[in-house]
Length: 315
Image 1 (cartoon, one colour):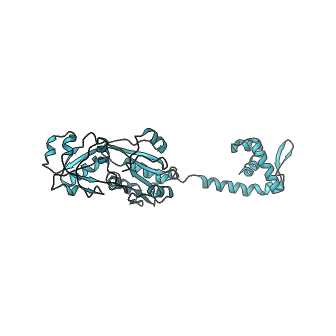
Image 2 (tube, helix red, strand yellow):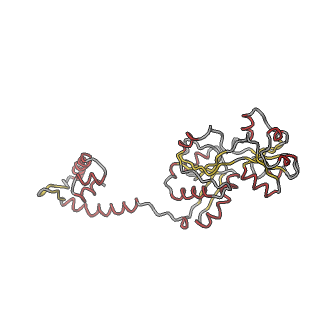
């Protein structure tokens, strides 16, 4: 590169300026090139530098190489319509319901040959993200410092679903009082390989616990268990509203002591400048989520950690 620019400019000063280097650095490089090629390359003649015959012979191939290199270094224009790629997204069934499912029509319209494979959470999913086996993780976990980058998709709350005619329905449209909430049996959902239960986490902060009648590992498995019983089920509001409509159940805001959480899309640093992954992240951010929230800018996970709340296990 230095030799090509030197032969074009025939000046150490102009070559250094074009390359963004110091003149001594370019001068030293010229000295090394002269030694390697056993030719002075540039010689002074009549107050200006001219090319030796060897330099003239090198100039044209170097110009061709520079033109080819410049073309290779130009980023390829990204067009979703031409995208033919499989993206692997690690997600819980809640993420599929709240993010991926409403996104599918838009993906089909913009990138007909784009395919999505959903991978269950696993203990090594962050290692798979780093290796490229997984492209994106969507999760309620606070972003891990070592992951790289994250985008906040939306803020979520919790709601309670229960059968029509359940005595708790009489509390009206407000949040279920905690004492009444604890008086009934519960269906619990544990998420991920470590079986994280956000409701249990919040109640433990209050030194109370609920009576768990049945515990299941998937949100989709839980609503069928409450239709003919007095058990109640707490889950993220988007899922609760969906299952209440689907199964003909009532839906009430959970007690205020059960905190909400932010939902995130995580990607590795290697994908930050990949236009296809950036497009996917943009699509995930624009998925109709029901609350009209505007996604945060793309932020470094280190910034997220500084701004965020204390770390809890991910959902």
